[in-house]
Amino acid sequence: MEKGKYIFIYEVFDMIIALLIVFLGIVLFSIRQIDEFERGTLFRFGKFARILNPGWHVIFPIIHSYRKIDIRTKAVDVPEQEAITRDNVSIKINAVLYYKIFDASKAILAVQDYNYAVSQLAQTTMRNIVGSVSLDELLTEREKLSTEICNIVDEETDPWGIKVENVELKDISLPEEMKRVIAKVAEAEREKQAVITKANGEVEAANNLAMAASIMNQAPGALHLRTLSTLNDLSSDQSNTVIFAVPIEGLEALKGIANRK
Image 1 (cartoon, rainbow, N blue to C red):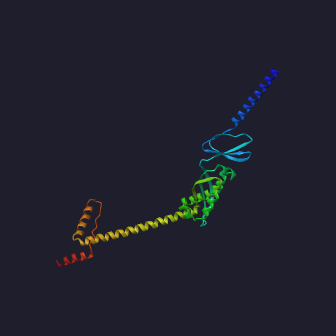
Image 2: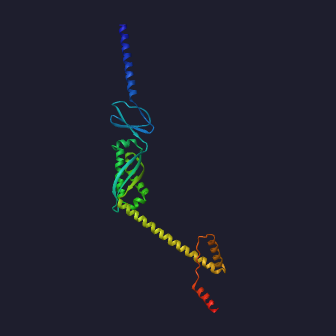
Image 3: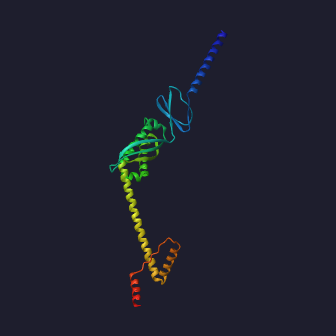
């Protein structure tokens, strides 16, 4: 009788040890690691329970399920979109969008695929904004339009727990005919500026010459000294040809003197 009692105790002890080993095995198998740049969403019996912070967590099979969310800033390449500006110019434009998740629970519960949803929203918003501005505004105010697109997309994605940090318009492709027209406009503008600059230079030179002539006229001998200075400059270079312009009146005076003799 005493021997049977000991056998029973040994069997119970072995069963307890076996259960502990199984339990420890389940616990070790259920350990999941959440990295520093991640957050986890824990579901208990299919219902959202809590957010898992970085570290080790026990996720029991069947009872629990979870999903990891990367909270680092992500870059989404917005595919090239064909749009028509307010002045009916057909263009192709693409962009890059930067966003990060600030609420992992909303990113899982409020939208099915947040990355795809953000990309589609950015494409639609970009086409709408491009259609509301002219081509000149699009080319000269790209930073302003990028900020406007960013603000609109950020406002729409806020219920998804997503913060849009920046939107950059990468490239704007124009039809070849429009490129030639823009080149002609730019060339005409440069020619206009060249003519204006030359005219301003002529006016400034004329004013300076008039001022110099006035000063020389007021100082006796100034014109003679200027003439001697000019001759001195010409004499330093033998390749120069010097032409003296003599007034007709001077020639007539010399001719009169010769006739008197």
